[in-house]
Figure (cartoon, helix red, strand yellow):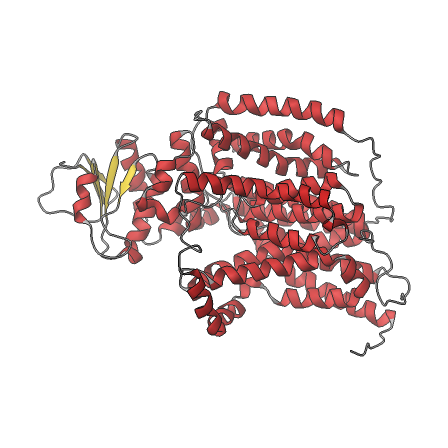
Length: 151
Length: 451
């Protein structure tokens, strides 16, 4: 392949242009914006991101955690019919908030309900939903109830 | 915030003696930054070892071996330290501009600090994988194998490398409780450590003006948006490992080679991409004469120890990794290969990947000339190899390809963008600082040449 002779001056001009484009292209001004933002509002925004679909759910789970012993098993009852929709969020969010307890899903990741697994649970955490003939709750609040399971 | 800051400070102190083996450096801050990275390695090793010995994590059980290791490291490094002079700072007149550019970098860092600590990490992958593992392990004061092997928990990717959850647990152990509010500080610390190293290494190579300006431009490539995830730790460990390897090749230094092997090895227990990076680095190393010598190959092989150890532990405990290694990987590879558009379209459509920067970097290397390209072939081979591994991983992925690429391509390209742009800045600054055209049509003054 033939080489094109390029003078040093031209090469330096080209290098300067590429350098400017590279630095400007690599630079993301987003973080500087945070210096001028209302920090309390920013914190509220990010804090709410994981739970946009169910803002009360994390507070409900915190209360469930406070009222259940470590090592207990808790079935999550959530108004969702499929794993990939809301239930995945509900189950995984509960796994984080209730770490140290065994969280039992009532919907299978592969699809379909698994109501029989309710027998594995010491407690039922019902969020924004009710069961037929449910026993009196141990606690209720934040649109949810904590019920001791009948085993 | 205080317990997290105390933990980060302790990590930097613990890694200090190990960093002193890599140096000396013109500035003390470089050693502190390297010390933080080596400290992460030490802390994670201790927590993992305690679990393997069935010793529950507590302040005493963690801090005792930590201080013993620190004392041994101080004694060892004191006796092993080679009597070498501290290299002088770049002799070029600095002027006011480097300070002005550095102030810009500090402002970006301040903004990043506000972002990283705005609230507890909020990303899905934090509370579904990295943070969840950390919290679950903290509850049992050790890696909870029963949690990882429960079929209901397969979503946590049980075989994923454990370094970041272990660092969360170190912070929790010092604090005496699990608190995620300021875990974003870990991302901030990794970012600061990397930027200090980048700024000071560039200073040695291209002088204070271009070093400060390039660092300002590279700042956001070294800081990851993904707070609470393993990206920040991985980028810091892997890029520092690559830069140390580049220096090892230039100086033919086995000391730097070992330091690089340690950091690359632990990058591989931070994120799975680290395993392919070790292979890519090894391949690139073999293209250099020094890299083909037996002692170098032997020393570099040490980088495989952390990930091989974790893989053996994973096999013993039956930890699953269903993203890539399911039985019909070959069939998926062939199927995806027959439909390249299913791969290329989502990759090219992802603006986060910033592929235009790769084109600019290629132009920068072309302008620097063939001699520069030859002398920098280590990184110029290692980085494309790593990208090829990313693409290979997509080809055998068990997930929906478009979804897998959309949710990861922008993130994994961040890992190669920072070292690639570092090298591009060196190439451009060298070209701009060139005083005469050489017969080879390339840069005459390359600090790290003659490999």
